[in-house]
Structures are given as structure tokens and as C-alpha cells.
Image (cartoon, rainbow over all chains, first blue to last red; front, top):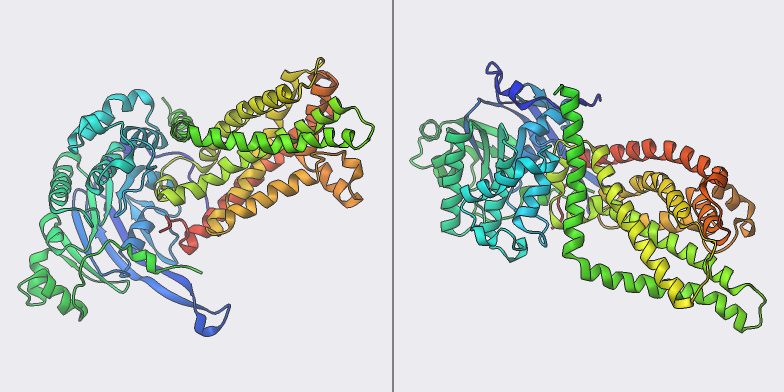
Amino acid sequence: MTEVQEAVPIEAVRHRPEQHAVEVRELRKEFTLRDRKKGRFGRKKRIALEDVTFTIERGETVAILGQNGSGKSTLVRLLSTLLLPDGGSAEIFGNDVVRDHRPVRRLVNRVSVEASFFKKMSAVENLSYAARYYGMAAGQTRDRIPEILGRVGFPEDRRDESMENLSRGMQQKVALARALLTSPVVLLLDEPTTGLDPRSKLEVQDFIREIRTSHDSTILLCTHDLAEAEALADRVGILDRGRLLVLEPAEELKQRYGAPTLEEAFFAATGREFEAENDEDDDDREVMA
Amino acid sequence: MSTIGSTMRAELVGAGGVVERNYYLTKRYIWWDFAWFIWTVANTLTIVFIAKGIEAQGGTLDVNRVATSLLIGAVVWAYLGVLFEFLMETVAWERWEGTIEYTFMAPLSRSMHLAGMGVFSVLYGLLRAVFLFTVCVWFFDLSVPDAEFMAALVVLAIASISFLGIGMMTSVLPLISPEKGTQLGWIAQGTLLVVSGVYYPVDVLPTWMQWLAKISPATYALEAARAAILDGQGLSTMWDEIWPLLIIGVVSIPLGLWIFARGERYAKKHGKLKRSG
């Protein structure tokens, strides 16, 4: 496959309103797992995503609800260019995630359930080197990093402290700062508040609202948290065993299933109870042989 | 600035970011690095003591020359270890810290990402090699009056192009096998040196190993370093060692990048480009 060598200037992409921000067509991904029942070299296929199709418009926030193993993280990783699909396609502002992976990488950033930093390094050091990967020189980040850390409510006196000394909530704020530092057009949030204490969760949610209004970002939010999905998203989708069952505004979704709450709508759509929140990455069960 | 110009600038800034990250990490782990350096010194001393041991058992040899020759082999071994360690950490350490997904989804090209790792590992490795050599020369009171140290360093730097190419090939192994990939990289390092005459002349090897020695960059690096330090030869007399190093470098870097790209594609296909735990 041809690698696109030249980065697409972010300004060039932002002014193409005729395109969907995210367009996913019949996207399919399956993993090969070890099958001990079939002997030492036994293998079996596990479908992670099955013909998933949807679009997200520029500036829109879409939440995808799903249980562990439903394929949420697989979807985020496909859109992040970290996985190759087995079928279908996905585009970010018209750039194919496989063929045009470098422009896509310039347009997308993400926050996942694990903050994921070099733990001996400080918040400023982690943000600094990460910004360089996006072509931001020291002159551009000298003021920008303190400013963005201030915006996410990160205490000034802890900026040079090792990440390992910070709470999960603090680390997640730095993760949000890292994602925003590169001015992404599409922000992928994979359970960004899972495992946070209630106060940190509210702070992160408030910040996501602020991003929506001030950054002109398109947001795909994968979450276990039904209330979070309802509060933050313009439309809510239900992903079950790799299939996207529905994607529409929360109120319409509830009406469709005649359910007073999103949880009951989820049950009606999937035939299963919505399981309790935990911080397990849904891909972790898809251990490949 | 043109699109190509701004892209090139972004790539260079990105490669600088890799160097910057490694600088921060080295700074944070500096005392662990110091402890590791002591281990390297101890290991090197045990090898150089072999020359003294042979003399003590009645062997006839120029102890100063043999000890220095062994020291050069041990220093190159340690230098190669640093290079391979940094390159393998491209994947292994990032996977352990959980940053691998963020690094591999960044718009920095893989060639510049690996180049950044290579530049830092060469600078750090050369600095460490100089310290190691100095400490051991002082310990054994070795005499190298004619040594052309600058020529030895330049040849080692030229050889590093080939070493980095081979290192890129091995650094993909932790992508394919998160559990055992790193160990396989050490096998490559050991194999490279055993056929290159690390502590002995290549002539003593079996014929088939001597053929392998001809395509190993370490062979030429060791020969040139010994010629510079033991015999005081300058760069102008080392063309026989330098041109094979340049050819191997020109082949190994693109080959290393190609193999890494294949490994990355495999990892993306099979879902292995992810954090562990």
C-alpha cells in the first residue's frame, strides 16, 4: 500500500465542510485466538467488529455504549491507525485510515482509559516530547504547555513532579492536555473517566464540554457510563458483540425501545443487562495468538 | 514555507523529540545507569585479566598489547549492547510504560522515529565507551602512546550506521513477540560479535564463520579500532575498513526500515501494537 509522505496541513482539512468528520463503512475486524480444544496449534477466529457503518459530522459528539469486549476499543484503535481492518473502510475528513494514515494521524488524538505516560518523567516532560512528535518545536510549547495544564486544572506546583506520584485523576487531566496540545480535529475518548473518583470524573466531563464549544472538535466517546453518554453526546450508539445496533439521539433511542432510561433501552436493544463499570480495556480479552 | 519544507521540519522536530525523551529518561535513571556502568566495568575487567592470567601461567605474550586488544573488544561489545538496547526499547519499554499506542499513532514517520533513537544511542554509547576505555586503561596502567583515538571514534561512528540498521531489524522482534522478542535481539548481538573476532583474530574461526565475518560490520570496526589504538593508524590508512562499512550501512539501514515496517504491519494486523497489562 502506498504511504502518503506529505502531511496534510490541518487548515486544509478544517475547511472541507462537505465531508463527514468520520465516515465508517462496513468496517470489519477479527482476531485469531489460541484454541486449546483444538490442540497445541489450534486457532479460532473472534469477530471484534462486524460491518459497522456510521458517520459523525464535524463538531458533533457521538457516544458509543458497549460492554467489555463489545468492540469499542477496537473501533478507537482502528480510527487511530493502530489496527488494520479486515474489511470495509474508515475515513477521517476524507482520509482513509489505512491508505492515508499519516494525514489521519495529524488530525486525530485520543485519551484512553489508562493515562499511559513515562512514569518517572514529569507532566511537562511527557507533554514536551509528545508535542515534538506532532512537529511542535520548543518555541511553540514553552508557553502552550503551562497554559493547557492550567486549563485542565493541573496544579502549577506539581508540573515537574514524576507522573508516578500523581493520582489517577491528575494523570487523566495530563492525558487530556496531551491530546489537546496537538489541536486534534477528531478526538477519540476511550472511557476517559473510568476508574476516576466522582469529583475527578465531573472535572474531566466539564472539560470535555469545554472542548466541544471552544475547540471545534469532533468527539467519539466510548464509554460504560450511561449518564455520561446522555449528558455529553449528541447521539448515542449501542455496540454489541461487534455490531452497531443503533445510533441516534438519546431521547429517540429511548422512544424507539419504549424505555424510560438509557439502561433499559440498552437492555431492550441487546437483550442483556448493562454490566457494572470496570476499568478493563475491552480489547484485553482479545489476546491474539 | 512549502509543504515539503514544513513536513521535513516537522520530521526533524519529531526526531529531536525522541532524543529529548531519551535524555529525560536517562536523567531520571542516571543512578541506575551508573550501577549498570559498574557492572560493565567489572565484566570488562574479567576479560582483560585474561591477558595477565596467561602471562602468570608462563605464556609468552605482549601483555600490554593483548590486554589493550581484549579491552577494545570488550568496549565494542558494550557499545553494541547500548545501541541494541536503546533500539529494542523503541518497542519494549514503550509497551511496558503503556505509551506505545500514543507513539505509533503520532504523525512522525517511522524512519525519523528510529533515527531519533539511533542518534541518542550513538551519542550515549560513544560517551559510555570512552569512559569505559579510560577507566580500564587507568586500572591496568595500559600504555597506548601512539593511539589515534579520534580515528577510532570516527570509525566506530561510521560502523554505527550498519549497527543501527541491524538494530532496527532486531527492534521489531518485541512487536512480534512481546514476551521473548527482546531476548532474541541479544542473540543477534552475540552472533554478530562472535563471527567478528571480538577477542581473537578472525583467522582462528572455521571457514564458514570467516565468510560471515566478511559481511559483519563489527569485523571492520574492530580491525580499524585496533589499528588506530594499537598501531597509531590514521583514517587515511583505513579505507579498506571504511568502504565495507559504508556499503553495509547503505544496505542495512533500508533493509532495517523495511523489516521494521513489515513487523509493524504484522502487529497492526494481529492487534499486537498495544500496551501490555
